[in-house]
Image 1: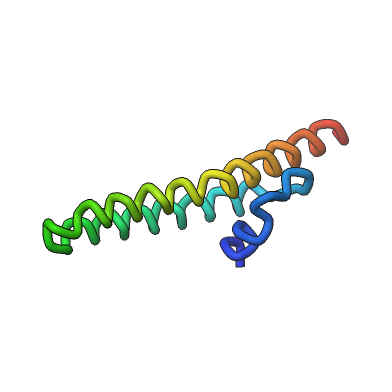
Image 2: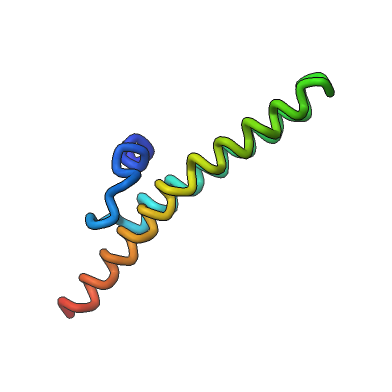
Length: 84
């Protein structure tokens, strides 16, 4: 459920998020990247460029949601520190 919200709230820079959500999403992103990298070893050499292109496209797609999640986590910590 965390990962679905990660993509749904890709452009939500004003909300808040838990650090656990951020860690889970980053871990899942790393797992997806690792699967793509491993598939690069399993496909024929003629497909290698396509796998690398896919890897870079996925990385680019993950940038904005990761940044927005990071901003929401920082916002959560700032609100907790102001209330104390």
